[in-house]
Image (cartoon, rainbow, N blue to C red):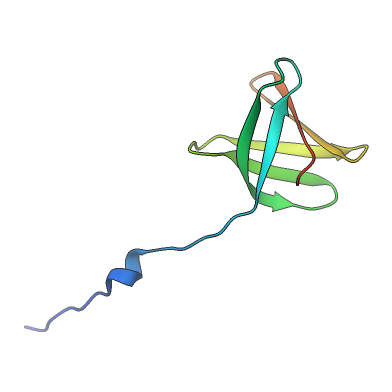
Length: 77
């Protein structure tokens, strides 16, 4: 029988994601997010410590998107 060797590093994924803040236009509440994708036309984020993904489109130098009928904005920075 052969022996199987697995490095403890094989199971660790180190990812450093850029972050931004989105803000509810209705309540003014801000939430930290990790940026999944970003370009001059759209911004795709995931709320920190959740699996909620929000897609925002760029209009007049600000990203605007909706999640469950709540509008959010972000500068993408």
